[in-house]
Structure formats: structure tokens, C-alpha cells
Image (cartoon, rainbow, N blue to C red; front, side, top):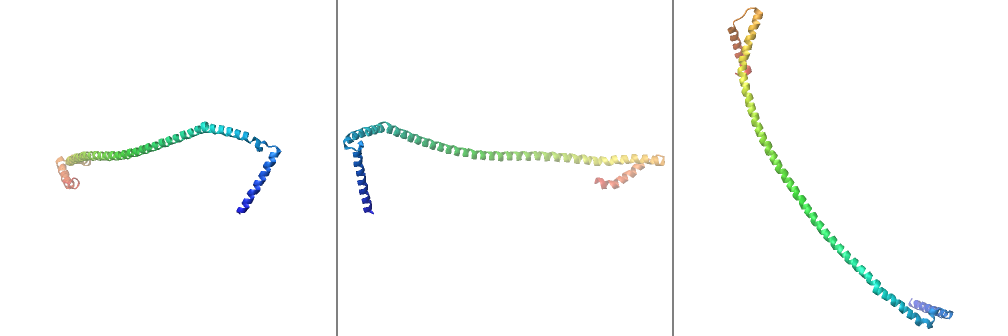
Length: 196
């Protein structure tokens, strides 16, 4: 394998040398050794000028731009990191405020509930007292009505009976005998209705 590559290199070198000598005899001036010094001179001038132009003008500007971009990118990264840290701090602060607000709202709701329950209980007690007082008043009125009702009923019964007897018999009956009968009946039936 190495021998094959070696022979190929020798063959190509001989081929190119033949072409060089053929071009020299054909009149290509760049291959003519007589013009090589001037070609080397202009080569050194041209590449020297390009080297100075690149090294003194273009490359410093490029490296300056690269440095500026690098420093700007670094500043942007630092600013972004500071913004991220401040955002995280504000987020934590916001979460703390929310949790404190929730606790305060729960405490306010509990306190309001206690106050409302106290007010409801107080109003219920006063209402119960008022209802009890009204019930007592009504019971007293009912007892008074019970006592007076039997007398009024007896009076009405006596008057009605005497009027009926007058209409039925056509003569007036003694009111004392009617009242004795009504009193007797009311005593018998009164215990049943009035609890006497």
C-alpha cells in the first residue's frame, strides 16, 4: 500500500515538472525564473499590506466588537439574574402577603361569626323573655276571661231564657228562679269546660 502511494507521488511529481517546463517554454511568465524576484517582491508587498490592514484596522475592530458584545451579553446575563432574583423575592413576598391575608380573613370571619352568634343568642334571650311575658299576660287575660265568662254566660242565659219563656208561654217568669236553674246547670257543666 505504501509502495503504491509512493509511486503515485513520484508519477504526479514528474507529470507536474513536465507541465512546468512545458509552460515555461510556452511563455507563461509566472513560471519563468527571470520574473520570480519581482513576483516575490509584489507578493511580499501585497500580503504585507493585507497583514497590516487586517492586524491594525480590521481585526482590532472585530475583537473590540466581540469584547463589547461579550461584555454586553455578560451584563445582560447579570441583569437577568438580578431580575430573576428580585422576581423570586417579590413572588415570595406576594405569597407571604396572600397567606397572611388568608389568615386575617379567616380570623375576621371567625370573629364575625362569634359576634353574630352572640348577638343572635342575646336577641333570642330577649325574644324568649318577651314571649314568656306575653304568654303570661295572655294566660292572665284568659283566666280573667274564664272567670268573667261564666258570669256573662249566666247573665246571657238568664236573659235569653226569660225572653224565650215569654214568647212560649206568653207570661213573664220570675228571674230569680231562672237564675237558680242556670247557676245550677253552669256549676254542673262549668267544671267540665273551665276547669273549676
